[in-house]
Image 1 (cartoon, one colour):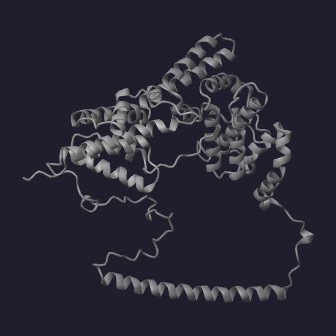
Image 2 (spheres, rainbow, N blue to C red):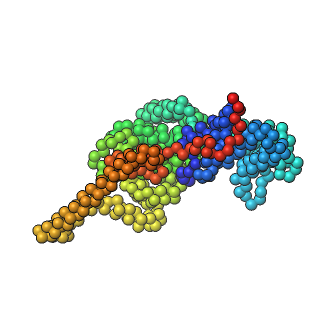
Image 3 (cartoon, rainbow, N blue to C red):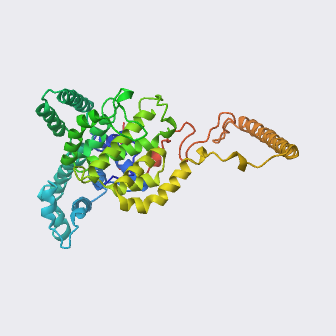
Length: 465
């Protein structure tokens, strides 16, 4: 199944990693900033339970560290116990999907969670509250477990590892070329595939292997004459012989590989506005990743993978319904070619989708329709003079409005310049450009951080100097 893009409350991976550093920092002030940032995330949308639990453990430990008698030991035990109860419950609840409830201990074993976390949760819920010392130690170990089991796994692949994967894929390509030319390198090329699969787990294929495969020179050859043609979207036999073994092996190893690969290709095709059909006879390069021949070859790979799927040879986990939905929701010249391929392979689909495809064809190519010259209405000189007079009248109205607007803007600028203390400033009329809602005029997402003194009372008590 093609993954739907996941909406997260952090604006970038860098912000996510920064909060991780804050929550696990030695400085209590930085840890407090991390807790407050997680609370800000919670106001924006859904936050992963592991992140919420980390912030909760850090917050209660700060409360413990800087309470200075303002809170009793019993209150602290209640706070720690509640955090543990919510932490364990939130971790195991997603696995309670069956008709009969599973034991929390059995789910904890699957999660590699220490069983005594479950025991502390049970004691805090049904028995006497654990001692404060046990709860403090449990908090430290829970933070360590969360760091190892969640935060560390979210880090992107190191660039050195990505470069090694790219190097192995290039080696595989050269060995397969030699194999096609008569040298028996099949075992060597399969060993390289095995090395690549050892380096990458399934959750990283969309950010490592797939972007590398889509670089010019791999699935899409550098030489234009070796790329696919728009007329029939047919790949050269050499390209299929080189890459079919690797692609099908990856799909058997990682069930989401085929869907992830096609999704990424569709995103590239949909993102670029270059019309393939308009460049059928002139496939000049606009840029490496946006030339029409590059996009045509990507479309040809989707067609090839779909043919393999419909023939039942490989890519058996392909979710054609999601591919179909993507193409129908985002019609373009490129996705239109994918729809035609699916209709060629599936007669039942062709019957149900044909009206939509016909509508898309008309919409995309309406500007190319040439009407018969006899159907064009005749225009007399009198009609032309009337039309010219109307246009002159409209032009005079527009010029008058422009002068009035310029006058108003000039007046506002004079008022604005005379009031330098005002927080509101009039943007320069000639430099103003429209921008997306929520962005600054330069297209950047603004930093909405509040000063710490306005962001709620501090848990950390600053030492007097």
